Image 1 (cartoon, rainbow, N blue to C red):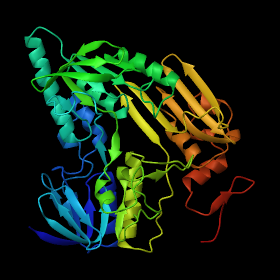
Image 2: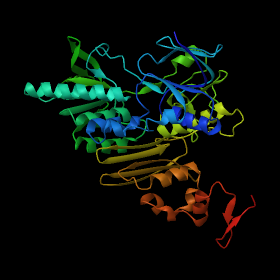
Image 3: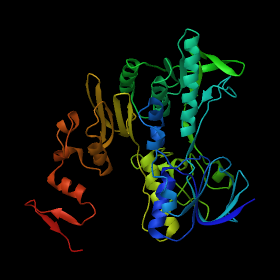
Length: 454
């Protein structure tokens, strides 16, 4: 049993963890940092794993930071098999890894992300051709299985088929990736629409048609209630519309859950995710959390929920690292809201904020659709609260800024939403404020900037 001490111990090696390291080193260049991860790789861009299977990139270009990052920042690593955290003792400030290594710490950051949720479908447990699609190893395993299944199917004179259970972002990206390998990909989604969390009925219906034109058979409102297994291998699925579908492999992509068991077992406050204050500190002394493992307050509607988004993890990791290195640091995390940007083949989809308001919530909905393009804007009290942009990506950043900065919708004419605006759609004052938001300056009545004394 090895024993090691770290001034800063970080569990995780993705966006939040890396952001925390950079913040710590900005404030403390000498304190010892130890990072722990069950994955053996240098930090990589998880959103890129589907592109690896499609041949749009390779492993050498997945890196989010260069391999020298850890040495450059004097970080000791425990990566790979046996390096998952198995137990946390907050009173003794110690973490025990699966390989029995004991790490003591001054400050601890838990940035363990999410874990896939595998639905309790009859036949799914223990089958050798069921895969998840969250990590690089997941993608490699699924890709290898699809390749082998397709080779076998062709030798038998038939087409290979992959069933993806779950029509959310992960499921559809898995479907796109495996479509590059298998002959047929069918996506099952229990909800009445695909992407139920980030699209509305109309947009989802349009996307189903566009995916079908590119070879993805998405079936909203239908899932499987039984998987037939032969010799440990799933061979078909019985669907809830009472049909049967043969298959060569299954991808379980119905969603993810915060990987919060370690903190929950240590009696930290955990609701839908780990509860933190605005310094990203948990209910336990000297223990912080950041990224997908946490519960975030939605800055638009006040809801408390996990927000499994890369930019959110980066922002939280930055605050956590700053606070760990300096208890009096001014950095605070003030909540966030959902911003999704994804493509499927040549289809672009960007959504943000409130997109499916209730009929009695007081929101107004504005829709502009033409051909394969769909735009929806949700407003209330002279503010933009959300948007959907299907195949209209150009101005997404501008609309997100309008939401974030609570700009009055009345300051724009209808063309701002009906068409694709550029930066000149903002008033001169707004443009100045956006470009110089950290300086106490404004335009006077003549449009000349006036700088307050610093």
